[in-house]
Length: 307
Image (cartoon, rainbow, N blue to C red; front, top):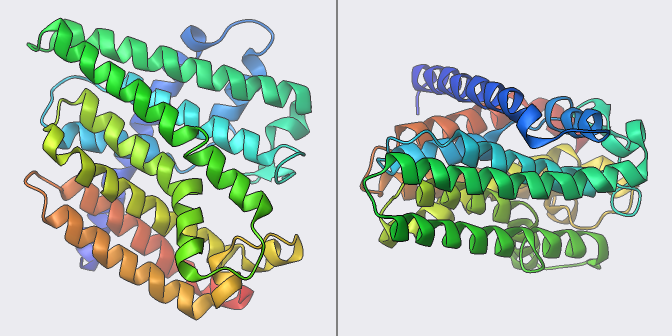
């Protein structure tokens, strides 16, 4: 991917990001009312992530060939991602005071409210997915049974990827793993902690976009690989902080920044090979890969100083 392609890809990502931001803002009043509204809105808007997962949902839905707006599905994914991050910051977990340079939800509103926001975000995600199924029913030629089957698959997928065999398992390992661990085990933890949510995001878009079910596994694998890359980058950036806080589940801390950076480049290469082999237009996914690579290269100097 040359510099021109990378620049165009970054511009494309910003278009998707703005769509997601607008979609969240437009849905806030529908998603939450009452005294939790302020904390709920703060979690989604002020402690926001890079939106890569919800962007991934829109991208795979488009790649699937469907012409239905999948914003409800993307907002649902973003609610789940925010729930995971809000829970991760709680005093009983990582006890993080900041998220995206802003006070974490529990620091601003208290731990009890922070926990209620987590529950509220998960409930909101389910509502988003249900409304997405209704939108698909209204606009697609597929019969009601087909839409219902896809919705059931989404519910099952979400339960697996955020539950005790997915992100919750990854967080448990993150809290309790004892060093030293082999690299294969560290990657397994990364895949559960972060890869599972990216895999979920990719498959949600593919399912609601009515993509071919025979390709669902490959689409999910692409998402998981992207999540793996993102977490490995975070491990390099957070190496010193994680070491100071005695958090052993950090690839760069365990094996060194050079080894982690080499693995990141190998994972980016494998991701690009995977999406290039898929029988659909993968240009959007390639632009996401370009954004990740550009972010990695731009932060190498700071990361090297941390190492």
